[in-house]
Each structure stands twice: as C-alpha cells, then as structure tokens.
Image (cartoon, rainbow, N blue to C red; front, side, top):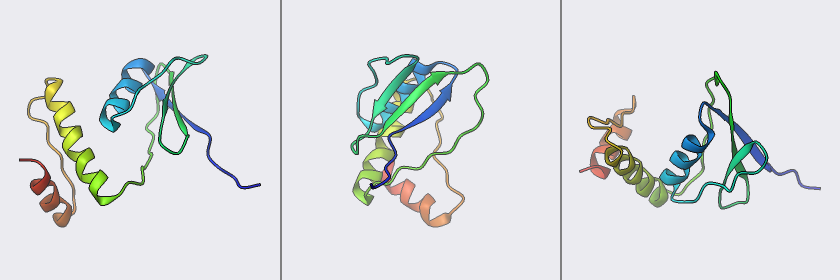
Amino acid sequence: MAVEINHVIFRAKDKWASARFLAGILGIEAGPEWGRFVPVRVANGVTLDFADTPEPAPQHFAFLVSDAEFDRLVRHVYKVLMTRGMVGTLLYSTDEETRELLRTLIP
C-alpha cells in the first residue's frame, strides 16, 4: 500500500477566519465544517483542517507549485492583503534574486 497524507491540522485562534484566509489566497473554498474542523481541500485531495486552539504554536507548511502558479499566488496574496486594508503590506525575501523576482510580480 502506498502511503499518502490525508490531512494536516492547523491550530488557529479562529478556525473559520484562518481557513477562509488561506482558501482565499489559494483561490479555493473553505468548509463545510466537519466535527470540530473547518477543512480546506487542496487539488491532490489532502485537507488542511483548521481547529480552534487558545494559544496556537508556530507551524510551518510548504506547498509545491509550478513557477507560473507561484507568480499568480504572489500577486493574489498581495491583492488579498491590500483589499483587506493591510496598507503598507510588504513581501520580502532575504535572498536578493527572490527580491528581484517579487519586484517584477508586484507593480
């Protein structure tokens, strides 16, 4: 039997707000609520399940996307942050080459 990831639990102070935020960035839907979780289902069938936690610990997750999808996502993240009133939003990288790429993606 091949081993696959089925779901990952994201601990958040507000599961709906966090799930909607990530889903909005990725251009997909959040929910419906299932048990104590708000799932966000990605293209390969894995669900990112958001659960309320009073004091969530830092977490790290990485997404594998094509170069074209990365470019689209960077533009979309910036647009989402700006339309939510986050004036002065800055996308930054410690890597000079990546900073140059970000400058070309964000007008």
